[in-house]
Length: 111
Length: 118
Image (cartoon, rainbow over all chains, first blue to last red; front, side, top):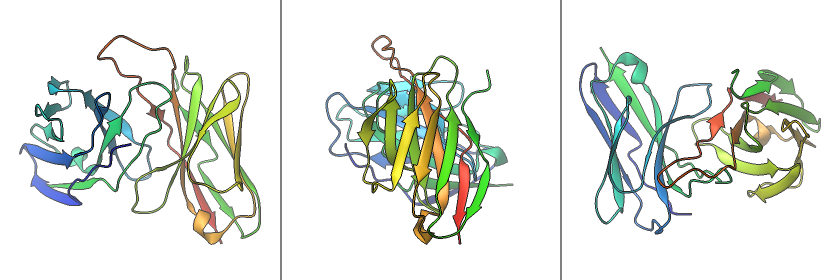
């Protein structure tokens, strides 16, 4: 499975847009890019998934360039409740997929 | 729908003891995966169960074993506990029904069981 690299931590303020970039140079042709969010002492929660170009849902946007060697999770107008660890994963999208987590990006949103 | 549930929420054991953790998958899901998350680290895949058999296994010793029941619920057993087994143990469920191109078979995680080994 492709390995990912993302910043260890990021700081932001309420109301700002936050962009977290993830590198995945060895992504395979059939790999998808998925982002999970995790609050302390809780299980990870799916945020968004994409294969190429741009994907948007009610929570976030995911930008994927044509070479797919990186991706950017965009959180619009963050609030204090967005303080969490964000994980970027690459791999298949079947129910059998073994998820490979890195150390994630710790986002701290301040007032 | 209760989502993925795990029990117990917290557990304290001593070295050498054995522990059993339980997971009930989200309604409609037939696959259960277990992950170990040490403090400050991302979850690490232990193994996955489908049709009551272990389908995939991560890099964990045989002290870690599991079981899946006909109702899709699952247990994780750890024998001969070590201090290093202290972690948050997460269960994730998913469906093997393949959806259309561009769809995603999301894995839903439970709240986890916090195991402390003294």
